[in-house]
Length: 204
Image (cartoon, rainbow, N blue to C red):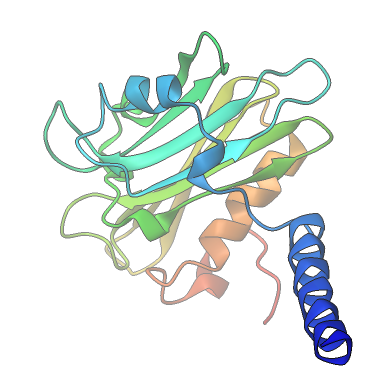
């Protein structure tokens, strides 16, 4: 009986060790770590939630939760709601506040977020004017939590098939933000000739 028990115990210990290893290796947080109050607040603006990403508090910044889903009012389009605070959550940023026809997001895959610096995060999105998503009128936006500012770039295809790029604001965009926006434009599948953009795109 003891001989049979020892191998079983070893298997159980190995399984526990694997689970602990997965937990410690930085797996992406799941929606279970997001407070119900934060989700309920986001659902005031969203009919559905396609994905949610938590950014734990760090160095004075409160917990942040990014929700992506279909807009409730107006009832069309993909929308991003950024909520900060676990105990008393409040909406920190709403993508619909941009009121930009170039930023009509056609799918949630065009919305991303990532850690920025030591205690910040950024949210990026790509949209377009309806029916002008390929070599037409395409927009890119970046929200930076540390500065609580939004930066936008537009790409417009001209009659001679050249591209015109404009930024908002026109000046004062941090270098790292400008590089991120340029990277998004250079790698966008809706721009067929990135080498023709009036910005520097690295050769693939």
